[in-house]
Length: 112
Image (cartoon, rainbow, N blue to C red; front, side, top):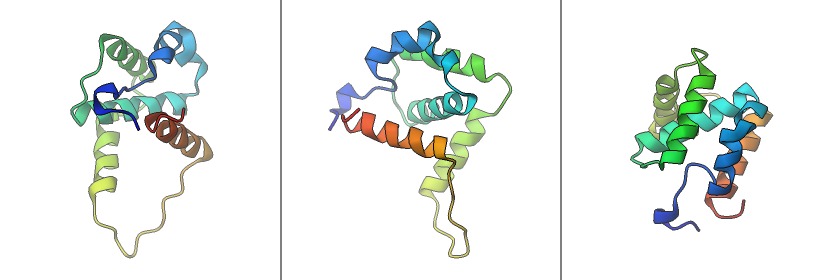
């Protein structure tokens, strides 16, 4: 388990790769997922390092006007914190999204 003081948005060993062109090798959906995950953590009170801020700024620049991260973060928070509607259908995530979530969980639990 990662100690709270060791909590990171991105693996420190990957920040140079992300800033050095790695972000451009990811699909738009992968970049958006990283962006939303980072923004959600920051809105939840996480204080990013200067390098993490640079990655988030680059993700924002690459996203352009494709989507509104604030709106997505609000919707994700509402889904996570909201009550279950008995008539609601199960959310089915695309395979890329499921893979990214699994990677994030492994990274946060210290397995990645």
